[in-house]
Image (cartoon, rainbow, N blue to C red; front, side, top):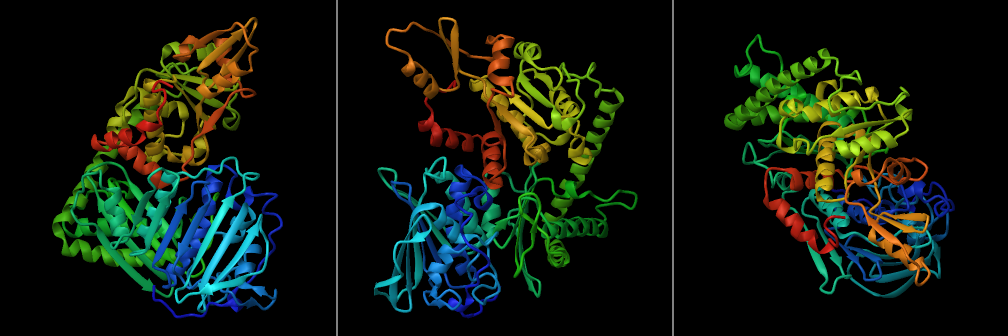
Length: 637
């Protein structure tokens, strides 16, 4: 979008409400007090710097993780204003850091486009930090102020002179608030890389000083989202060499699209609004999909690639193997949905649809060879989809939804209310037998899976549906897949993966998760998919016993025993080694068990992980193993 040399001073800082509730209910403002919420603090500070880049005033951002897990963010933007906000008679920088919803994004002329999703910004970071230091270079001076748990320890003061401009914020997350204060390099790197892709030529540097030799990585992409598509397709075979790219501006805002088809079967379409990953889609994504389907069909008919008697290609056929980034920038985004990451602005639907139709029509006309490859691939996908539909119809005709005839030996539960029931996906018949005896038959169903199911990352839907184990999984869960998928038909609201705590068990768990991610992603998004946590050890002292779920817990149990106490230690290598009573007590009883909920907090990281670990190419798997080998202590744990 065009850069305007707009004002940005104290009068542009508007205030909506106070900061009092943040420390009492941090989850309302940052999602959680776990790792997700902790990393959100960094995102809030970085987003302020990115807003300066969107406004055309910032070109570099540096994020530094210090040895004490404090974080510094430095940018070369205009610097937070230091003059007084008239209403509060305090410097703007202090107002921004101490009052919720205060900033240049609420009607002032500070920003035309802002990436801040909720507008909570650095005030929440300040409230949830035991200490925060801000340094602003602006108006020829260097200004500093220090805060402790959200409150200033003294006034803003000038401490030096500088011709440069910019903001530097260092904060120490409050251990009284957060479950952990240890930042993850991988989590921050993924987010910062994504941000750099979405802001062409913005240089973002991540430094980790916690290692003996500080780790440093720079993210800067001259190609912007074109480089993003190339990055996502790096481990895939492209159908056409050069990604398709176009951008359009209008009264509604701006849209840019980059897209490239691969020879694979996976659709990776990521949509962003003002740099926010809109996981739940929205009007911009709807406009893109509508335009894509109509334009490809129109071209195919015009060129005679679709005959008069042929049905139109479906959207999912056209998107098979497609990697696309849709990025829109608009003045006042309206976010909806469960997690407030669905764009609701109605004008963006027609705006994006018109832009994509025009640009893609021109591309197809000017590039007949890749155009033909795209249509041919979509036609092949349509044939596979038709064959898969026949397979599903055959499955239904066989009456496989009846529990007595379901393949995979499903032992169903008696309660029919899906929200009250759960299904355990268990590795092997031996463990399945124990689980069937251990369960509460009223609300717990058991589906034993024989061996390792098909890796759907390497197979199309037709081949996947030909797999007996996958067919059993689909019919047991009840949602269907592809055209037939309907989350409302889910027969259970908890699908719990229960495998052995060894290498084979981990592989089976990964295969099942790949299936859910590719064919039933909404099950994960709704929070229906879980991983059971069986114990690794049983410590018996006389007639009493305790279970340890990892080596740390085992050491804690043993350390509590009086010196000279005799005990026996049992190491469980598989679920089948536990009798039904033990399995119920440790892993299946809702009152005592531990379950891990599978989430998609970071879709990009998840996408990369599945392609790396389950895709066609061997090299990414080798690199992953080499990168993480130093973190492994016991390979069969």
